[in-house]
Length: 523
Image 1 (tube, rainbow, N blue to C red):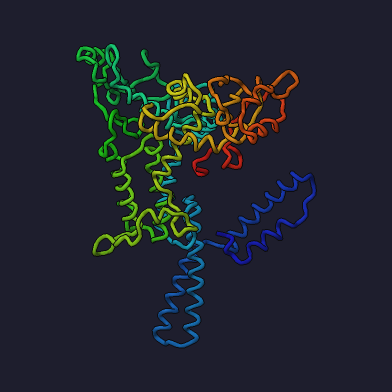
Image 2 (cartoon, one colour):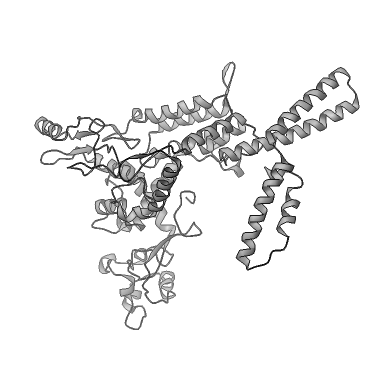
């Protein structure tokens, strides 16, 4: 906001260039301290109250307009135009003020939605206020100083939670993702009706308190009214009765809602997504025609509406009919309504989803977003030792390397559709060697893909051979291994790797990303 004032830059430059003696860090500290004080004074005496400036500019324009209507002349017209420019400038300052207060960084200056900014500021104030907090003794602390002290303790404990809290706790711990838990339970639900001796059972526990309340059989306080159990088809009525008596939970049938996503077995139906579609429709109904211009609608669409389904898209593949319904809601919101009803959609939605340089709005297709999120999960299976990774490796890769894993007839529909892009991930990744404990034949460590693709008779080679074991005592590649590679280019790519195994871990790097880390944007 201050940057719009014509003398601001020169003022800051003059204050900053005044000499200060001391070490470099001390000079920086003293200059920042001096600048802060002078900026406060400058804001009060020079920049002034932006809201009062808007009011004064509006009053001035009103007076000039009345005078011009009574006596129109060239001088009055020029004066009116000049005052309108001043009003436009202070209105822009006020807009930026509310934008900064609301911390809505995705709206650009010029789309003046002051009511929207006001509502965002009020929401942020309500959400950010902590009126009371429960102390270690279980008593509520209500005085501001006590609340602040407890909050500081909590913030310092955040970094210590990961090694202390068990891996099954996916939320509220930095570095963990709740989508992992949802995906694991979805996989379990797909096997609910698999034939077993007495039938399968799913227990859904709703914890009243995450960390500080405990109960005998689960070690945490369970909300029995919100908890439930689900039985497979093979379970008997006697078994269902016994579980109900022991747990006190009601019996339910799939689908049920688990962590905001539908949990189901069998065929995925359109009706499972009614809650998500209704939530988006209600969100749009609260915005429509009240606060935003067309530019504001585009921004809200890209950064808010398109983000609501992500929680579900990360773990499920909605039917095409559900995606079409969402696109219809998005398009209705973007085109808006007139007094005669909905406006005509002159461009199909998929053209809007093209990149900006191709004439689109840069909105990502929901199908692409969902695939990117599922690919991120598959990447974690390749690279991490988390609850998610251990589960899927044990279920699908127990007796084979990921490179050899097939797709047909394996696992749930979500897993099969994700695993179909296995080659996409592997071809865009490369192992950065450290200890060289990865597979010589199956790991893409040369950048040319798995060396298994360049072998005539795969049955005669040891697929478990590690890279460090392919070296002789002098650190050179063993000749019989090089002879098994039928491609000159692939053999040369091996020979060019002159290295010695180190104590560092082998790291799988994502080549489309500069830092080597997998991101959904890079897909």
